[in-house]
Image 1: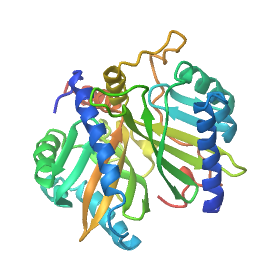
Image 2 (image 1 turned 60 degrees about the vertical axis):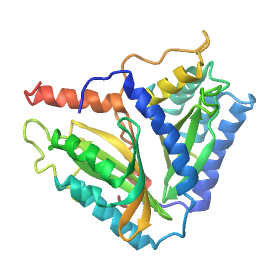
Image 3 (image 1 turned 60 degrees about the horizontal axis):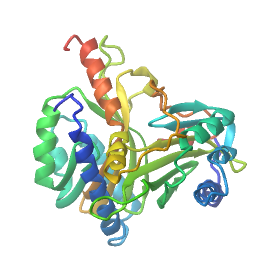
Length: 173
Length: 184
């Protein structure tokens, strides 16, 4: 299997974060995040489920984030092991909590780099019950334009079977 | 342990989020990094203890003063408080196993993608407790992933843990497993 150089993996992930930043500034749409993924990529969200293919990812990213323009996702740290990226960030609900602090939900992105600046897997991990509570505490209400997530989710968390870059992007667990 | 999902869960988790914020600010940057091999050995010890049905022993891998954030069950600040929660909890679910799928280490931080797994009710793929050589994850139907973050404190001990998983998935899978075992 091929292990990409860490600077290349970090640079590619940095571009994903840049796109997230551009979305936050209102100069890009969430669907543009899909451009950093391979055509057969898998994207998993705890609230929205599992999406396969960059086209499906673009559609889902747009739909799930409509009405969430005021949300922010500040990055905490990024760890790279071979082709695997682990990035911690806050999912920051707009507004403040009663004690004046940010309504921050601790979140992780697990992503597998597949070369050519693209990723073949991302799994965003957070506690959706906690996020729901933070939304309630902050008083944030989704606008009417927001879409409801699917009632039933595909909870399969598996990454694609890619012998060329290793399961989970690792030469061994 | 309760299998109900009262609104209190989110309340507990909300307190957890604030603890987590404090934890990252104060703990991630403290002290020099220990040698990679030492952190790796401590993690292997941690994973072994999680699979030997001795939860007092597992709790001993934490320093007396520590921070443990579980986004479902709450926040604990002492080794003894972790034990008061974990020992009785695990007595109610002795079949649960904790199988690392992969882990990554950077400095004193260990990130562990872990399967929380119950045995197949038909007895297939047993022994499921062979955590070092468990076989493909797809052999098992009753499991959910949990990402654990640990900070190593030296002397074989950790002083921080944070667990991230989908609480509704945990409760849903536990309920289904109990039903399929004829225990519901």
